[in-house]
Length: 114
Image 1: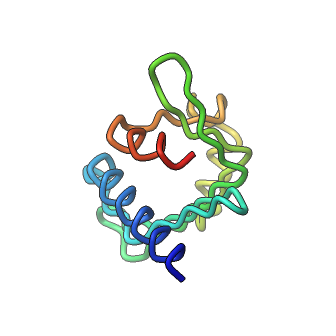
Image 2: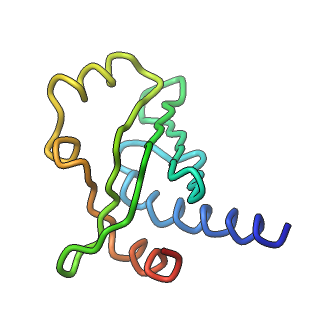
Image 3: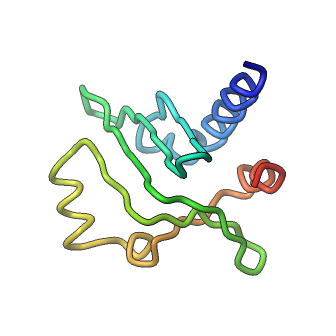
């Protein structure tokens, strides 16, 4: 029970930090990081949209490369078919490299957890 409270608090703290970076595009309405299954699930409400976007990251890990921290992953899926097709056919650099740089404030917390 106590472990669940800590996990929920950490998820909420990371969500608050990441919200700063998502703010120009919308808001993160929920975030769940499950270290046992190595999955991240996030719900976003993007600006101008009426429905939320579900994002599911599979096989994540955290890696430090030089002075930067990255979220590495095996696969990402969303609740929008067109986004999944776009990511498959014309992936941004981060999807080709299968990693996202983690903002410094979030990396400080992650260093203690992983």
